[in-house]
Image (cartoon, rainbow over all chains, first blue to last red; front, top):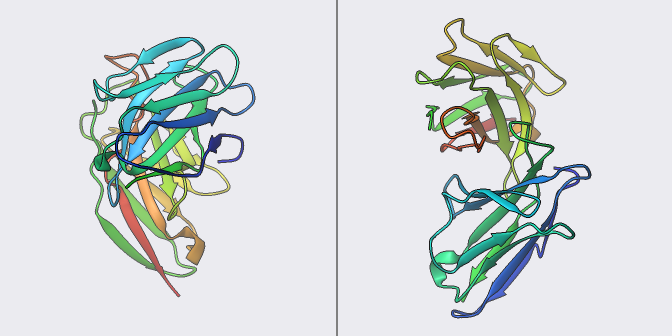
Length: 113
Length: 113
């Protein structure tokens, strides 16, 4: 897990607010993955990004969720108008390239009240 | 997406070897077998991966069946710190080409003192 930094570690939002989760990949990594884990469930793939490109967003809900990985700065997972069902742990992972081993961060725990 | 099947839970005594099985009968020729583990309230941790040959590292060994339809993660001496959920994953690099990792429900390993 060393190297992939996620913040905030814990975030509380009221229903209808926006949540922004940030992920800084390991040094030298240009590929980022986002996963969501609901309580007592496994990890669900959301989106796979390369710098300035979305490679695969097949796991992203069609509405309210978006992700970006700009040329400079961290990857951002943005959830608009949060609902209670968005309460989950969101994990980011990074790799050096297609098909290479991915390494996870410690996660961001979102609680919607 | 190629699927894996793992037992929901297993128990082991401390300092004894543990064999965690995984079935992946639909594996394709280019799919790598990855193992991750997740301790409570932490991100998944990379354990080991392989393609056809058995693999060893400082954490564990991976034994892959000759037909590649199953594999076994071997912890040589379980410690209390090895109590975690262990995920066997086939890296999706075939038809979609996006190399996303699809997590199943994993095996919850309990280590008894």
